[in-house]
Length: 234
Ligand code: HEM
Image (cartoon, rainbow, N blue to C red; front, side, top):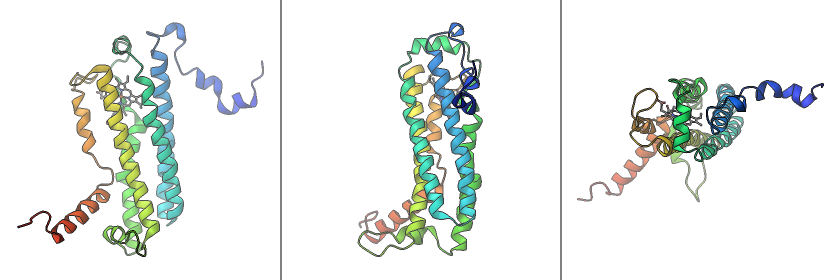
C-alpha cells in the first residue's frame, strides 16, 4: 500500500523500526526504556540545533530574538525533565533484567548530552562577552540597573541574561531529577555500568554552565551585606 504524505515526510517507517520488535524484548519495560531514551535524544538534538542558532543571533547583536530562542529551549528542557517521570514506573527488578543487555553503555556517552553541556562554555559565553564589550557594559551594571519602582536600565540585556540562567538551572534540574530516578531504580551508592558509585553523579550538580551569572549575584549580595554590616556586625 502506498505511503501517505504524512508517513513519507516524517519517515514513520524508519522511525518506528528503531525500537526492538516486541517479541525480542528482554523484558516488557524495555520498550519504554528505549522510547524514552530515543525521544530524549531527539529533544537534545533540537536543543543543540537551537543553541547554534542562538550563538549566531548573539553574534549578530539580535538580543530580543536570542531571548525568544532561549524561551523555546527552556520549553524543551522542561519536557526532558518531565519525561523522566515515565521511567519511575519501571521496577528495580525489571531494570536488572534490562541491564544484562546494556553492555557498558551509559547516558554519559550521549553525544547530544555532551554537546548541550559543552556549547554554553565553549560558544555561548564567549559570544556574550563580546556582546557586552561591544556595548561597553558590565554584568554588574546590568544587574544593578534592575530595581522595582525605578527606571530600568539595560532591560533587554537583563532579560536575555536571565534566560541563560534558566538554561543553566534547568540543565541542573534535569541532572537532579535524573539522579533521583537512578536512586529510585538502582539505589544510592550502587556501582554504575562503568563501575563508579552513583553518588558521583551528585558531584556534577555543582557545575555551573554560566558561572559569571551566578558570581554576579554573590558579589552583589556580599557588597550589600558589607554595607549593611550583616557579615560582621561588630
Ligand atoms: C532506568 C532509568 C535510568 C537509569 C537507571 C540510569 C542510570 C544512569 C547512571 C547510573 C548514570 C551514571 C553514569 C554511568 O552509567 O556510569 C547515568 C548517567 C546519565 N544518564 Fe541515565 N539512567 C536512566 C535513564 C536515563 C534517561 C531516560 C536519560 C535520557 C537521556 C539518561 C541520560 C543520562 C545522561 C545524559 C547521563 C550522564 C549524566 C551526567 O553526566 O551528568 N538516563 N544514568
